[in-house]
Image (cartoon, rainbow, N blue to C red):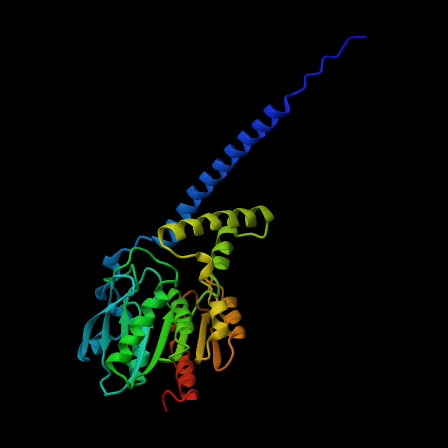
Length: 325
């Protein structure tokens, strides 16, 4: 019978090897995480915007440009709380009024894209303020924070309107990212209640949920895990580079505290932000509220697809809340 030679690994060497492997894995996982997280952060917060295609000339066929040229208007610069200027335009209604609506555009657009909604409000007797959100148009800012810092910018615009017109009845109408910005600002506004109503078109209820949904694109556990991994590191990058957390941009949490009347609008065929997110927000909101699901409309297209019905629904909302008669 042959003697078997058994080699026993020194416990100290064994634990040292395990420690080294653990350190290497930790570094490798984090390196991969920050690499892919940074790519995703750049994709959602540092989007390239072709500003040549966001000016008034690009959008002038989407609104009543001829009427706009006949109305009194002037450019405004409003200080943000973060060291840059917000560029905007104040448009006076042909009939003198204190009613003023602030329109907040969506991602990669500008104040001129928001002018399509100005027609509706000008017809209903409002003055209109449109402005370029941070990192858009002629406004400053180095990144998009998906509503986090944008809400404070909007709050400054609201305060500016209240300053120049103390008797103003103020409304806010936001589209997509602008809708989210509006909801988050509404939460800030609950003490002073400077804003009398909000109309929010196709908002997301929670950005981390939306991004996770877009990253995974399936219910498979491995895809869900990968999306959470990338989102975790993208959030770390956002905290480091932009000073905000993706997990903090959550209108569904803010909506619980908002008593101001809100009208929710969403296209039934929206595949970019599902209409179910507006429904979630609507159901969570207490107090005065209404919702309009626009038939056959894709993302941010409800006004164009169903303009007459859209306008009628908004007008009914304002009449019901005694904003207009």
